[in-house]
Length: 336
Length: 221
Image (cartoon, rainbow over all chains, first blue to last red; front, side, top):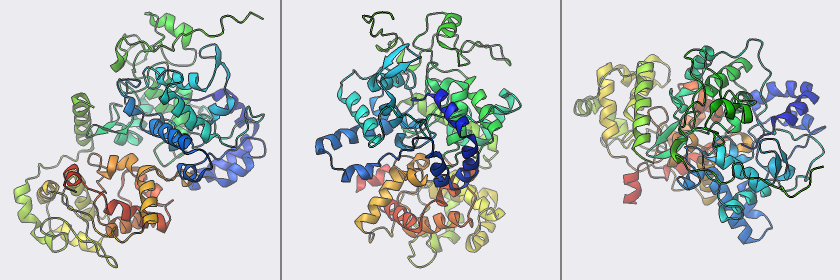
């Protein structure tokens, strides 16, 4: 998941009035031009090109082929199943609308804000390394090699989506990440979340969160369980999940759930099991301490006393270790 | 993928049905054939229905999911889906006959959709785009994100739309858009249909009418 909720939260507080007015419009007409126009005053609003635009673009035909391949990998990442992907997800399972849609963590934002320091792995990451992170965590997999055809095609697609947007923008980016609604007055509840999930989500994602394959083909992604993202994924965190749900679900009806419902459902989902974090040290408490400041990993579930993440189930990938996890960078640069 | 998914999905579907209390009767296709006699005037003996360009098209039922068909018949009876003709015929069937008729049509081989052949290339290209990728600038999600790869249908909730008649798809999408049909779960179809222009509806109806309804039909083409 390419998400960086912190700056976004700041951006939203900076124009909370604008966004507040915009939200009601967004809920009905969804693609609220009014909200965008207001946002444009103090945010970077970028409209990424579509695949139709690609056909008419004045770029080398070979580049078009590579971008098309990148788009294909992005929307059908399952073609890398068993090699780079070991769960039931596509990139576009979370980055809706082919990675273009605001408030669905549009991926072009990575192309204009990286290289940059990333807290998650404590060094400067470029676009490829960022994508590799998605493979290791969100796809519960092993990334394609840096510079490989797949990696180049994916990054070309990201970068082309950013066509015309300024590099290292000096304004907050409109629609970046999965901004969560305000935390509701009542703290999130597992029981309410379960009810709301079964009422609003299970028709597609199933009661047991396994998602849905029809005739062995991907249809609806798994919100938890072996087919879902592992514990290291950004969306395994409560706030990110609440933002994703509020801004995007049910499919086609963004911002139709209440703040309370979004947080409750997110709480319920993020308190289910998923494949182990590839950074697992063998000890859940230690792993939680080192890597999980902002997820429920390592916490005890109230209703049954289960400690989340206390298992050695790495999902379908078994004991394969993603090569990028824990890889040090820039060790030769002197301490300042 | 593998059997793991099949069994998992099977289990889930089972649970869903039990939870929703919709496992009324086991349908019997043979009995269904007899009960379907009154249906065939419009839906035809082979369940192929008919595309009626300037009137009310009769949908193909052959090869549709049995539980989906049963739900529609119950909805017609209960007035959750409004259609004067179908209300009359559905009211002639009891719950067992509904299950039987649904089983019967679901087991007939799917026939080819009609009404898409005259569409020009541009319209079909737009239809294919909406079917496979949607148009997110208008927040129209792709049809296949719920109706499944190739629009062949998903479970008992999301019907197969590939190989359906263009006239029928068009009137149904328009009905959702105009809120004269709203028996979909959670307004999933209604919300999207409202964002589609009449041209979009035309395009996607034509596209799916030209597409194979089943894997068998695909290999036969």
